[in-house]
Length: 188
Length: 310
Image 1 (spheres, rainbow over the protein chains, first blue to last red):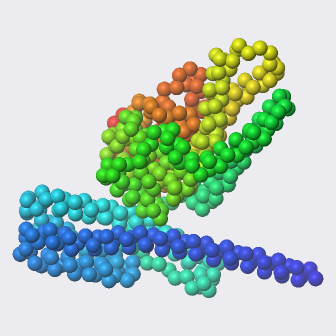
Image 2 (cartoon, helix red, strand yellow; image 1 turned 90 degrees about the vertical axis):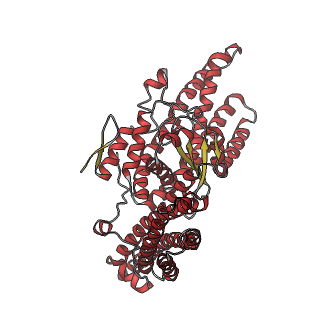
């Protein structure tokens, strides 16, 4: 009879642990999804700003056709991006294209003085800051989620529960080499 | 300790705080009832219960009115709003908290509110004037860190429940010394006990606030560094706060522990002498050193400039 109790006890503990590990994975996945949603909002906002920017600059420098085409294509790529990896590529392209467009605008002091242009530039800077903040958060959550997914016993639960690894977004070299530092150490 | 454990601990302590608040008042009621008879116990218990209920839900607005934190006018300080939104995104909050302004030349900031959805970040006009963008980002991210760690409810409750005990005791003690001497009779034991209680209560209250806030300041500093990725900005801001001698106009003992830096710089007399013992905040130097270790840099003692990157 003792054996039966032991078996039941072990099974119960195992079951509890599986529930716990599963819930932890769900929480980490939700955090990463929330992080991605934050990035997505900002990328959309940036994409929405591009047509306005093109309109404003066109009024002064209509002949710079290649720059406009580049930035419009980059915008389309940004909107079509389906994964964090693709979005990262598209975002890099959009950032460079916007940079070139702003460089063109530099040559027109009258354009730079308009309120419309200044407001657009502020909004672009703001989205850039927010994309950076959202990226830091997202990549941190992905790091914790993925490492949990890859570590032993959790990976069994992950396999059974259909959890998939997530892609990082615009991972910098430095960040890849050194995992993000989130410590809750007991500082004095 | 992970973030989840920290959040759970904060929730547990908040409940504990409210329970002990209720218990203390039931005890007071029992004592008064035993001495004077009448209906003191139920009255005191009901008052305490109602106050605790209000405090649980409305601590944010209570603290806002005590500290003079008003909402931002539309179009006012757009940069501050951007900084708060950006820090909220960096902390993974689902929506940015409300922004409030305290019209006070002394630089300081705090966060308060019931939970992460009903919390706000308040900064003084002095802070906005003194800090550059990076420093402001560091300070705001520190406050957002309190919200993310769910410190806000516990620390706000500590202000409206515990801090109020200290304030009340302060007032009653003053009345006992200067006002109440005229009454005849009265049980001497009760008077001695009462005065002893009035002296012990604020010390205990400050002790609780101190225990709650000190370690959380380090944790919020760490949170700030991870949110902005820039511990130097916050370290520099803390250095500026350290050097600045101004005292806040609206801060009182109930809310002191909420601020990023202690708002009561120039305490006089006994309390000044004991301020090290009962400081609600760790020394700014220690916090700056923690950030230096985290980011691998050093600030010059005299100028606050970054001197060496390790």
